[in-house]
Amino acid sequence: MIILPVSSAPQGTTRAQALLREVADQRVRCTVLVFGDSNDSREIASRADVRAHGHAFRQVVWVPDIAVVNGVPRYRWLTEAHGDGWDAVAATIRFETSSRLRRPDALRFYLLEKAFADALAGTVIP
Image 1 (cartoon, rainbow, N blue to C red):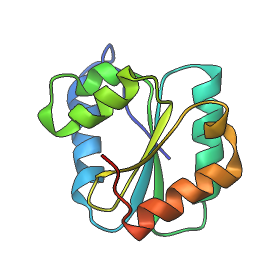
Image 2 (tube, one colour; image 1 turned 180 degrees about the horizontal axis):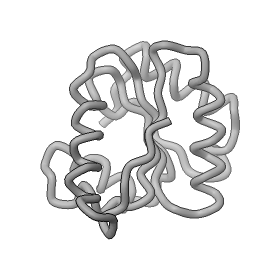
Image 3 (cartoon, rainbow, N blue to C red; image 1 turned 30 degrees about the vertical axis):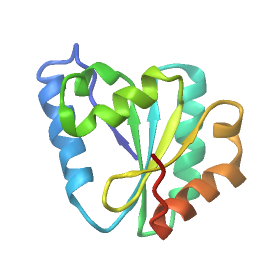
């Protein structure tokens, strides 16, 4: 699991954007991105990581502070998803939205598995 730095950390925004750019630019893994810094978001990230473990083409990125990507056009879809109340989003290998999850669904292993499978299959939603 990749945990992005928070904006209040030294160089946090710069480091977070660099990490996320690496994730977005690679064309090998689908990604589940989890938003927030709460007990629920930690649990969602942990459960997603369980589903990703052992799969070379899956990864999890935990975004505890969405402010690190505010104002970056490439990541506008992430800030919009977070603003719309989604707890997690799955992205294809082209870093396009494949699915969105809210609690309690985001905590269900089956739906996390489906999110990864849809993203790996290249399913894209508006």
